Image (cartoon, rainbow, N blue to C red; front, side, top):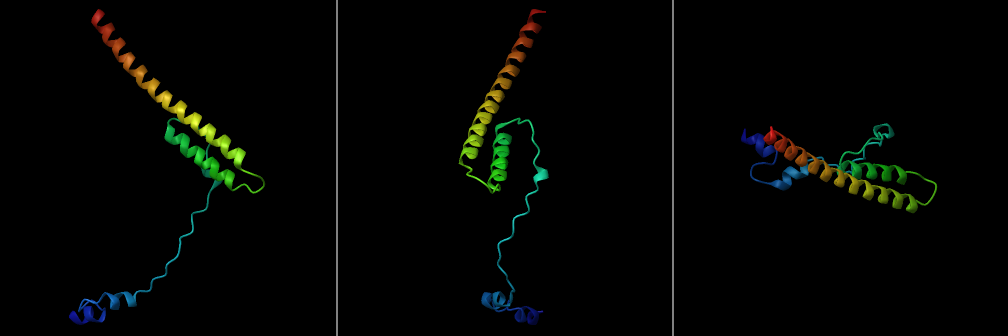
Length: 112
């Protein structure tokens, strides 16, 4: 058994012997292809969805080859900020509405 470890360069402890026997090829993996069919226009329910949707739109625009993207990016950024603000506001209003409904139900139960 020791002979097997020694042959592999593990006994005595010799990391250089082990590393020299490894066949390592370092390369950068290619990114997966972008499938346009994966993008579905959808109603956004929270700020995270709004930001990810705008990021996706921006990446699709950047693949466009013909003209300057600055006005398009500015428009998408403004849209994303507005959507994010509206989503936060919607979240706050939904929570407030839920709280008020509970308080209203409690008042109604007391009056009966």
